[in-house]
Amino acid sequence: MIPTKKLVMIPGPTPVVRSIQDQMARETVAFGDPEFVKDFSEVIADLKAMWRCDGEVFVVAGSGTMGMEMALANTTKRGDNVLICSNGFFGDRFIDMCTKKGLNTDVISAPWGTSVTPEQVEKKLAEKKYQVVTVTHVETSTGVEAPIAAIGEVMKKHPEVIYIVDGVAATGGVEEYMDTMGIDVILSCTQKVFGVAPGLTMVWASKKAMERRASLGSIPESYIDFDKWLPVMHDPSKYWGTPAINMVWALKEAVRIMKVEGLEERYARHRRQAAMVDDAMEAIGFKVAAEKAHRGPTLSVYLYPEGSGIDDAKFRANLAEEGAQTAGCLGSFAGKGFRMGHMGNIDKHTLVSAIAAVERACVKSGYKVEFGKALGVLQKGLVTE
Image (tube, rainbow, N blue to C red; front, side, top):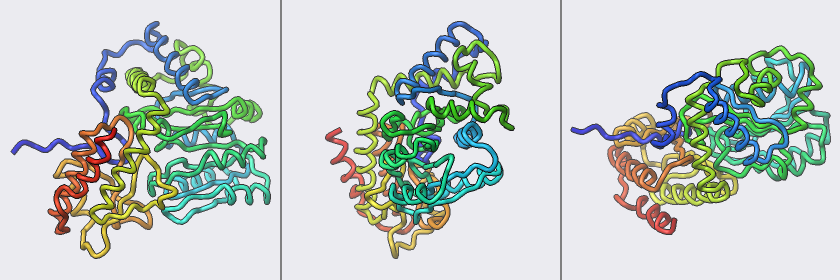
């Protein structure tokens, strides 16, 4: 039997299109090569312009988690107060980071499937002086999208506070505008909506965030210090740590794809396609874990139908055999469903194949569905794309 091609439908890494793969496969050159320096400079300039950043952009080898630490390291000092707005597992990850850094943390935790509200943030900011507020834009464990624009309006009333947005599962697929939304720091990485393999973290820092970094003087961190990387970002021929050359080329191609599609259309496409996939899954009895008002457009958590008798591990194994790799749930959702990404450069064929694989996996797992029911719902949506 010919092996079934496996579609990467987890919340990241996401599928990597051929033109981006080709950039990763190029012959590696010296980081001081004039052509690479030019390419790296153009990537930085594009990222700064596209996210409307009045400060600096840092592109550094590392993961999204490193981006979280980078954001905190350059905007806080021991003893500072941080308000963490958490909608799930990855929002909570900030707690451990802050504690180890000697920061005082308060946490607004939303029930899984719902989001922290601007009113909650406003109430906490009225009670206490904070140096930083963190918000996870799209929570990977729940599929919840936080209202970062509305929270940004609250933050504008507190200009002394740094507003950090974790955009790991959002940036490039959900609206993020640093200027109008009052965001001071966005952190993200390549393997989610950018559709590149894991390897780079990107951090956008506003002019205000850079002023905060300057006020801190020397910081304990080295590799993730803005000041160490700033000369490189201004002139990539300079050295601090070796850049991931082929990954920068891949990111450049990903940015080119975004620019051709247009960010506004890319955002709209993600919302349209997410709604289609959610409708398709609901048509065969699955429940979207995130409340409708808070559903993120880049990934979803699908809970198994009540009374279906579906065994989580068996279902996901069957689904992988049928060609779609998905992720298990975390926290209170563990064992109750699976997580599916629908972000980046995914096309219609991939979405159709993934939903068809879900239908087959359901039947193989003992949950009888009408073949084509979910697929038909998806197809009706896609025909208008």
